[in-house]
Length: 299
Image (cartoon, rainbow, N blue to C red):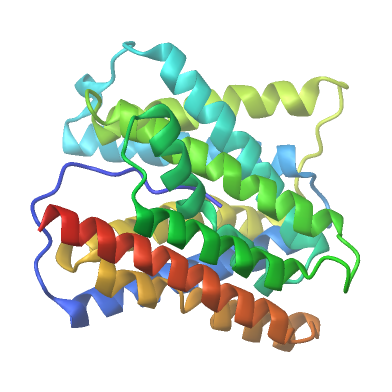
């Protein structure tokens, strides 16, 4: 799924009730995007979904930036970083869209939650951040959680598992590159190049064989949900983080898993795998250990 673009914000204030309201919006938007992705897959491949999503994104970014008067913030500095970030994100998002069409939704969301752990590892490798004992413990707990979700040797490793897990790695790479860009670039600049570059990348991927499917009239509402869902979800998530600490917001974000599990059961008759829930709880614990350790260090 799409990654949040961090912005320079003041120290979070403690407004957990307001944050909870914003997180309800994020959970609804993320879940709606997963359902819309499955519906759109009946007519479109993942490249086509990403292309139409980017078309909607370009329009939204241009309109909002024009109204806010921030179009002048778009620069051509660090185009290599922008391109690398968008290739990572485009790849991760395509893998995510594919995974939700071939694997249980709860499994995909559980593996998606490993992305912050990969971000932690990449930050140590490429940004020089110190890998503390607690971070190593968090990584080990998260790895055990992945084993509980995938259950190698107990059930066959499916394409959905592999693509969901690899997608989380690409999302982590996106987060690292975004962190680098936000040192000098504004959110308007980053979002402008995100939508325009991914539109071009999507068109190339769709048209390489000379055949790009057009959505039917019945499919247009699902495309709109995909286009708006990511922006809405991450706006809600970013707003929640701006008014409450990550240690408060993250447990709310993790509520996405049981919600999407219920959606899978009700809409698609997907079985509730206890291994997925147990493993996801371990992944959550690993992420929470990392957050608490980071906050203690900066306190």
